[in-house]
Amino acid sequence: MTAKSSPFPELPQYQAEGMAVFMEPIAGSGERLCVAVAAQGADRAYKVVPVIRESTAKCMLGHAGPGFLEMINLVVNSLEHHLKTGAVLGTWQPPMTGVYPGEARSGRVEDLTMMLRTTARNSAFLSRMADFTADDDVEVTVSDRWLTQVKEAMAQEHPELVRNFSRKLQLYTGGSPTTFDYVGGNYVAQLSRIVPGNGLSTYNRTAKSKMWELISLRDKGHTGLFQIENFELILYRPGKNDPSFSESDINRVYEVFHELVEEADQQELRVHGVQSPEGAVRHILNGEAA
Image (cartoon, rainbow, N blue to C red; front, side, top):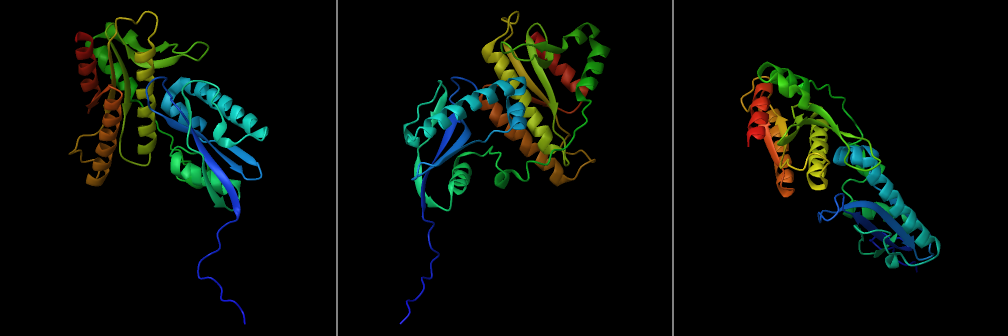
């Protein structure tokens, strides 16, 4: 008499633990990003994978991105060294402040890669692993004359202020200078835009990058800029009745715009929308006069 086969698929037999590692992009902000995932089997085999891509770090932190990636590598190396000794995953201690190991969770998987993917899916929305980033790997080249148009409009009204555009400031010791679109006596602004089309996601990432650059300057300060208290992201987006685009395209642009505003609000940063270079100039002048 043969035994009946089970109607349920057989569970994987490899026992492993997975853990996510989080860091604060801005120290003390309380905001944490998953920067790596690790897996360790019952046989003490292990894998550690960073999950922040270089392009993602640059979009979030601008020129501070490479420094952030270096810190991630230090964290990954520390965790790998810990696991290499045969120590348990959950006993690892971070090598620096601002790094937070998640809970080590166990399960039965086919192999360590399966555990890494499961952990990344649950914790790392910025994961660089191929299974989760296929759509995000398609980059769109965006040609942008927005800053030039605003400078030209400023030259028509206040040519003496044109020198305040495209100023380079060093935010981190040893790092490359960051370019800020407008740095005046009382006001700093980054200029970006969001328009419909295939490049919308790229415009969105660029705007977020400029936002984080402003936050870094505001929170860390810079020699010679102690009196500046006003920091703002000025975003061009077409009007809601712009006949050049469909209603659905316009609605998507405004969804992205409101998402950026909400993210900026969480960081106590202002975002102002305009529909022309002249509107941007007027707002810059108002910021200087505030």
